[in-house]
Structures are given as C-alpha cells and as structure tokens.
Image 1: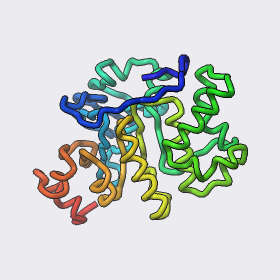
Image 2: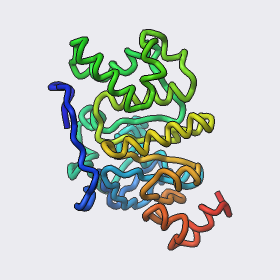
Image 3: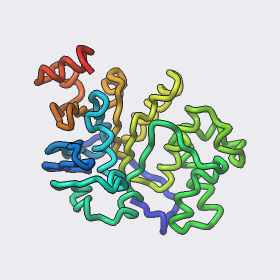
Image 4: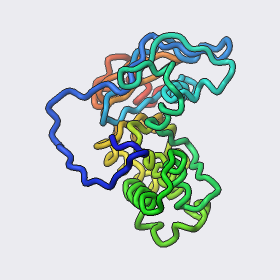
Length: 270
C-alpha cells in the first residue's frame, strides 16, 4: 500500500479473479469488554476477511458498536472500560498497537455525518496534511481521487472552497467517507452510516460500499436487515453481547442455523 509519506501518482492494475482464500484482517478470540460492571462483549470469536463487506446485526444494546469501536481502539476512551482476550489486526496484536498507526489504516464513519467546520477541500486534505504532505499538487490529486472514490467529485468539484456544512446530509456522509479514504486505509468501519439518510442517499452509499470493497475491507453495523442482505458478504448476529451466528450472508437470511437468528432476521423480535 502506498504510504502518505511517499505518495506518488500511480495507475493501479487490479486482478479481478481471486483464486486464493481471502486473508484475515481482524481476528478476535475470547474477546471480552466491560463498561464498569456491565459485561458488554462476551467471548467474541470472529474473523473478518479482507475485501469483503461484513455486516454486524442485532438489537439495540447487543454490543455491535462496542465491537466496532474495539477494532480501532475507540472503546478505550471510556476510563471504565476493561478488556480481556486477544484481538489481531493483520496478524499483529491490536490491543497493544500504536493507536495512531492503527487509525492510519482503519478509518471510521459514524452514524451522523460529522464534517469538520472547514471547506470541502480542507476536510479531505486534513488527514494527508497531518501525515506531513504539504505540496499543493499532491494534495490536489489526493482530494480529487478521494472524492471520486466517494462518488462525490462531480457534485462538488466547482465548490471545493465552500463550507462542508453547505452539503446535503447524504453528501456530507460521502464527504466523511472521502476524508477517511484520503489516508488510504486498509479498513473502513461504518457505524449505522445510512440511518440518518434518505433512501436516495442511502442507495448511493450502498453502491459506494460495493465498489470500495475491491480495495478496502468494510465492517458495517446496521439495524436494517434489508441493507445487510443487499450489501454484505458475511453477517454476524449479536445478542446480549454474544455472537449467536456468523456465516455467509445468504445463509444467515435463508438458512440460519440458530432459531434465534431466524426469529431476528424475520422480525419476530428485536
């Protein structure tokens, strides 16, 4: 992967056919997380595979967002948090990794769009500048490429100096995705990224995820069963802090092995 410190314009050739098994990006074993006395995650054993969209579903309070935040160490911002078990990122110890380096490879998109109070251009250029890129020509290319990957370039290319707050909600969310892509992450973690969007904007973000997974692994928390079924390759069903079932998405929705999963995906509880 091209690092930001030695960024060079490149033309990438992509081999579409995959004959080898996908590698593990994240692997958690017997992972437990407590908020004080509340046992939020219980013995989580999950392997997230590269270049796939993995959906995490389950009712409110089941541990979905806690798991996502554990993957980029955001959960530790709560001083009451305690963690046990193991978690790996690309084969290395995630829980003892340097947070700054981890987050340079693991981007995060939240439920509500959270653009910075800056111009559209400066939102996308923020990360690369933090990594020491100062040359205007290189920043211009990164901004353009990131906005194109986020399917936003054509809509904003003539107003890059305008405030990001002037964009619609759907455009702001795609801008936040572009901002994450500007640092060339390996992974995008997405916590209910379309729950505040209208159906048209939701469709654009879903199409974007399908395109991005060619280069980026995506883990998405969603309450929307139809969305999980449409966009994900694998789905994990969480309940009361535990993984009830984890399998290919088609199996989860058509032939789940657990009655609890069947009840949930068919709207009988939750």
